[in-house]
View 1 (spheres, rainbow, N blue to C red):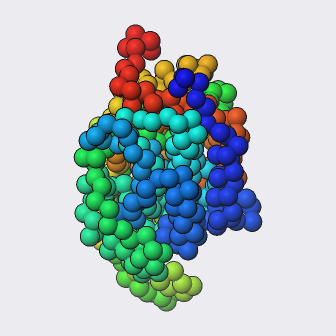
View 2: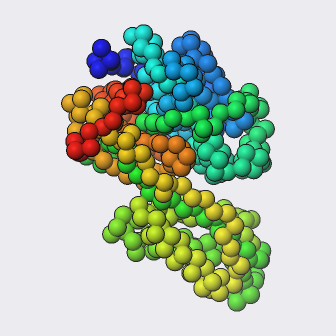
View 3: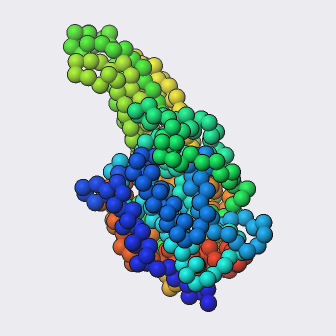
Length: 420
Ligand SMILES: [Zn+2]
C-alpha cells in the first residue's frame, strides 16, 4: 500500500551529514557559496547520488540541476521537488540542503518499494539561491521561470569581479538542458521555517499558503572624496552621511508598519574609499522591504523614495535607486496546499497554515506553475547562522507529508474542500 510509505530517515540523515562536511565551518555550520569549489564538490556528490539512484541528471545553462525519474504516462508533465545546496557565508547545514536531499530520499523510497508514478518526478537544485555571492538571490529559479534574462544573469559579477557564467564553467556545471516551466506540472519545496513559530508551538508541519511581497532596492549615494580633517564641514559631500540617513529611513518605514507585520532592513553597505582620513565619495546601500500585503509593500517603497530628496539635500549627495528586484506576491496553489494538509493529517499531525517572510525559489516557480511549500521547525527559528539546527524528529513528519502529497498529486487526488 502506498498509504503506509515512509522515507528512510537514517538514509536521509546520512546524506545531510555527508553534505555537512563539504564547506564545514569550525562552529558547525557551512560556508558553501554558490559556484565555489565547495559548491562544485557538493554538486558532484549530489550528481553521484542521483546516478546511483538511477536518475537522469540534466543541467541547464544557469547550472540548475534536475534529476529525473521517468513516469508511466506518455507526455505527462513532471512533478518537481526542489531547493538549494548553496549556503550563506556563515550558513547552517539544513537551509535549502534539507529540501533537495528530502526530494532525493523520496525518490529513493519510491524505488525501494517499486512504486511507479504516472508523472515523471524531478529533484531540482537551484543555482545561487542565497545571493551571498552573486546578487540578486534566487537567480537560477528566476531565469528558469522566465523572470530574468539568461545572458544578463550569466554576466552578474561577484565582489571579486568573477562572472557567474565563468564560475559555472570553472566548476563544470554550465549545461545545456532545455527544460522550462512548460515541462512542469507542479512544484513542491520543503524548507526549515527560519522563524520561531513552529518551534514555539511544538508543531511539525507548516503549510505555506502565501509569500510576503519582497522588494529590494540598491541605492547609490554619490558625494565627493575629501580630507576628513582639513576640509571644512560646509564643503563636504559625505556619502557615508547619506547612507546613514538611508539606513535610518528604511528602519523607520518598517517600524511604521510593524503592527501589520512589516519587515525592513539594510543588509549591505559598501562605502568608498572606506579609509582613515577620507570622506566617503560613494556608498551603496541594499534596502529590503517586506509585507504580506503587496499594496503595503508598495506603499513602503513609495514612502522610501519620497524621502530620498530630503536625504540628498541634507547630505549634499546625489541619490539614486540603481537596481530593484521583486519576489513573492504570487499566490501558492490552494490544491497543492490541500494535499499537503491531508497528508499531514493522515500522519496524525495538525498542519499550520503559514506565510513565508523569507525568500525562496518557490516564489519564482509560483509565478509560472502551481507551487507550494512545506515548513519544518528549526531550533528557536535560528537560521543564516552556523548554529542553525533541526532534529530528525522535527523534519520526518514534513518529509513524509510531502511524499504523500506528491503521490496524491500524481494520482490526481483532490483535497476535501470542507476539511479545512
Ligand atoms: Zn534556503
